[in-house]
Amino acid sequence: MSALSKVWVVSEAPERFAKLGAVGRRLGERVEAVAVGEGAAQAAASCGAEAVHTVAVPEGGLVEDCAAAIAGAVGEHAPRAMLFAAGKRTRLMAARVAAELGTRVLNDVGRIWVDDDGALLAEHMVYGGKAFAVERVREGSAVALLTEGLLVSEPAVEGAAREAAVSELPASAAASARLVERRPRTVESVNLAAARRVVSVGRGVAAQEDLALVDELAAALEAEVGCTRPVAEGSGWMARERYIGVSGALLKPDLFVAVGLSGQIQHMVGANSAKTIVAVNKDKNAPVFKQCDYGIVADLYEVLPKLSAALGA
Image 1 (cartoon, one colour):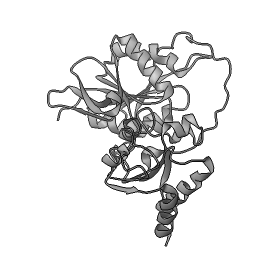
Image 2: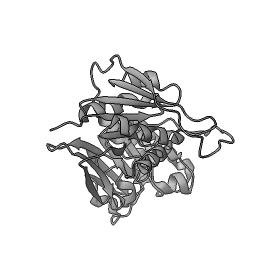
Image 3: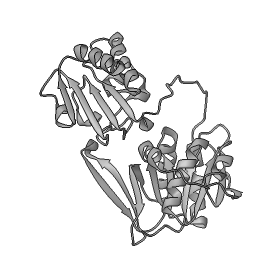
Image 4: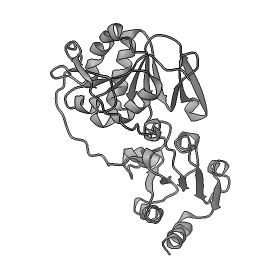
């Protein structure tokens, strides 16, 4: 397998650089980090990058306003790929960088590598998760958004820290949008993509208080709890961070337990890479039974307490 001549890893979040750097070192002969905003430069220097480029956020602006400065430096530095961790702000930043360069973003990349001809290949889901597509970039600077699942599964690189030259990219233009106010948003601290076991719940649960049955099973399995989109965004019974699916979390756990959910592709695409899938549903014709390794056709209100008790015995 060949390697790209130079790879940029770009982030505003210090904690992202370790994994981005690991992917960058797998793909490229030389890795350089682009640290957006304050506080990211030190983490960028420790990810194994040979050089660190800092870029300041315009006063009153947002991180995506740094896109023009990043794109403007591409001509001088000529990275063959720019890697971003998929997130709300970085999606916007990557899209604006790509637009400035007259190219497009490789979105939600779950697998990325370089072939023997030196081309970058990126695999991502298409058709709502029903299939995978591989895009091949032969030349120019590719802009790729990497999924959380890819970053979590990327092996750590030993001895990554090194002395890195630090330079500052030319200042960004004025902010394209004016920041009027910041309000903290209450979110749950959960990383489903890193969980080895997950119990996911659907609308087969009749009432919010009945989620306690799911929590008991998850505790017995030492698992995280996830849900379908209607549970998170329809009824609001669970936090948005626990939604699993094509536009939510994408998982690769050892065990995935589907409780009271039909198994629609929009949800199951988030878990079809699990090593073992177990389903509990009283409808024997539910699609989930065509996707699971083990299925229990029964009322979850009868099964879950028995499973929890047996696991805790």
